Figure 1 (cartoon, rainbow, N blue to C red):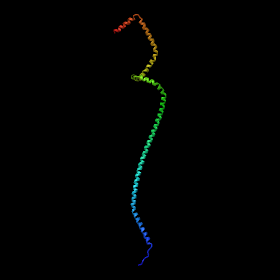
Figure 2 (cartoon, rainbow, N blue to C red):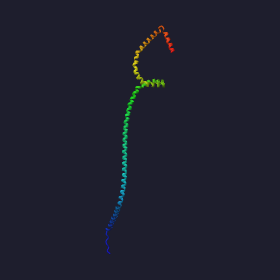
Figure 3 (cartoon, rainbow, N blue to C red):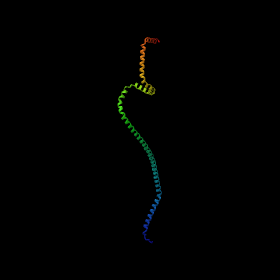
Length: 199
């Protein structure tokens, strides 16, 4: 038998071949596991997309609610501004009224203090019947004023009629004295009284 000399390269080549086979096997295992990993990755991506979609939907709803809140707040602010403007007008009007009231108080307070005792006395002395009578008289004032318009010219002539009436009364007195002084007047007077009693 011929003995061959030992090849020094067989060991390293065999190691390399074994390493290559191992790598190939690892590559094949990796290549076989890739579809499963890709499928898992796709499932994870779908789950992530669903979550992102939910977040986007929630965000859209939140934006919609925020827009509604902003619109409502804008209306409230506008109403508050209108109310504030109205309140300002009321305050300005009240300030003017206060000024007028102050002037009136300054003017009439001394008169009120002076008239208070007289008013108290007036109220103390009035009975309920007198108050009712005064109210009734006040109710008659319109008619009374209309009648006074026609009566005023007549009343104006009374100043001239007064002296004339006195003269007329004096004349009537003189005539009476003259008549009572006539002879037989007493007889006629008694006869007239007797006839009046018979009737």
